[in-house]
Image 1: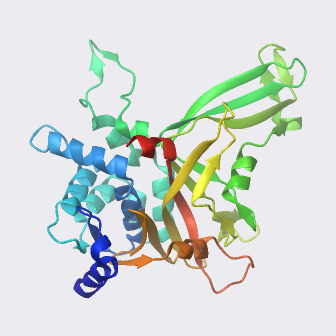
Image 2: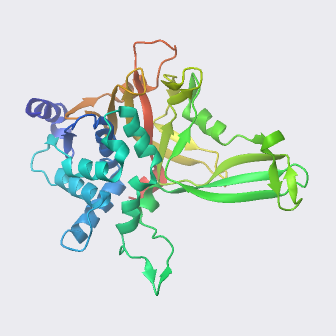
Image 3: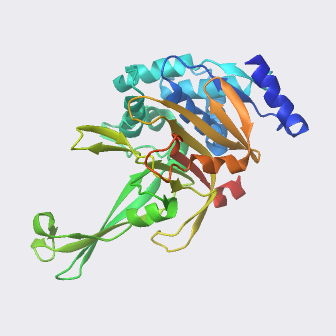
Length: 351
């Protein structure tokens, strides 16, 4: 990538951010999804800084067992400590650990790889076990509460599931944590409308009646999901791969879904708008779920960059909208935003 690297340095010129590194990642055979997510995480600056600090504090501790977090910290440290400003790094140790921990990543099918990262809680468990604290969470044989780490502090939000009995009007609320929001999508829609649908009221009746504790019986009810505590880093997964029963397989939805550079989150419990800024997009390139390619768009120091495995280049901010999707079902454009990373403007102001 010598020529490409020098091209990027030439394009940025005097504007190349001091101390920043822009490195492509080697592909080990269909690891483009992994590479794209790694780039998005690297340019999540609060997470990166805390991970580098964690590595610096723990690199000499022999009893820290290797896990995804230590491998990720090692990779980020490799990138940030490079003498060159641009180049290519092989994330071999991280990919090996990921394949060892999650068998779905051993497959060569792109969509299996993506679903593995989306569905398996094990992909985040090492960070929960080791960051900011000792691994053993037992004292006198009594299990303690799970550690709240900076992984949680950055990415975790809280949803409130509200159910209102239509007979006695009693509202039952149940909180649950989340690290990303998976949103159903529609043609010619937007992230804002998808979020409104996510929080829309659903009526539970017929076979789906709700057991009301106050009425002590099954009753018709209204149910809705609201965001009680928005996370500092909001990760939105667009459900572009849908199982079609008539076809007996998954189909990619190429729908045009507008994702703004600045997002206002209005469907929260407090009804106070939370403002976010887009800093990364993982893009699926291809017409179907079991083949294609993944790339990422990243905002760094007010510049937008395009990461395609080993290759890195600058793009204009206006180019981001070309990844919204296709307004028609059959289109030559198959590059569609799949996972969006937003940072809270409140948390970015603090940092």
